[in-house]
Structures are given as C-alpha cells and as structure tokens.
Length: 135
Image (cartoon, rainbow, N blue to C red; front, side, top):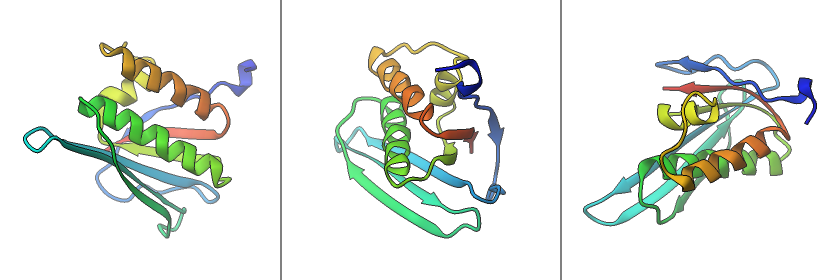
C-alpha cells in the first residue's frame, strides 16, 4: 500500500441519521450476545446517501464476547459492500472499543479481535472508508 492509499478513519458521535455525502453509503453494524441463552449473532444494513436500504443481513453466529461480535459484524458488512461494488463507505458502530482498535488508538486484549481488526484494515484498503462513526 502506498502512502496516499492509507486508510484514514475518524470517530464521529451521532444521535440521528448521519448526513452521508452523495455517492457514499453508510454501513451500520451491530452484534448481540445473550449469555443466559447462549445465543449470538451479527447484523448490518447498508443505506445510500438518501437513506434508502441497499442491503440488510442478520447472521446467527457463535462468539464469546461482544467485542468479537462487533468486529465480525463490521468485517462482514464491509466484505458484503465491497463484493457489491460499494467502495465509498461510512461505517457506523456502537462499539467504541472496536472503533478505537481499528483507528489504532488502543491494542486488543483478545488476539481473535486483533486478527479481525487486521482483516478489516486489509479490506478497508480496497475501498474508500471515509470514517468510522460511533453512535
């Protein structure tokens, strides 16, 4: 990757719909881990700049921490967007810890999360990840 190809990401706090620039898409991700039922899963929705849904997916998965689930949700959504030819993305997540890992502001305590984040970096370099949004 060349110097000007590096992915830069910023964290923006938002309460409502984030104003997406024309030509960009927003990838909103989430994960759930219900310890008392041993149920877990991830999901994502991709919307266009006017808010119209392009793709929405829910996947039952087994994982042992919310941080792992949130990372897997971002990775799955990013991969789906790139496979659909959507390379100009804003990524919105409720997991500040995973966003900080992606932004290299913290280091992961779970090696599995670190591997997921490294994969997100590689996938991000194939598109134009505008920013990561914490909501």
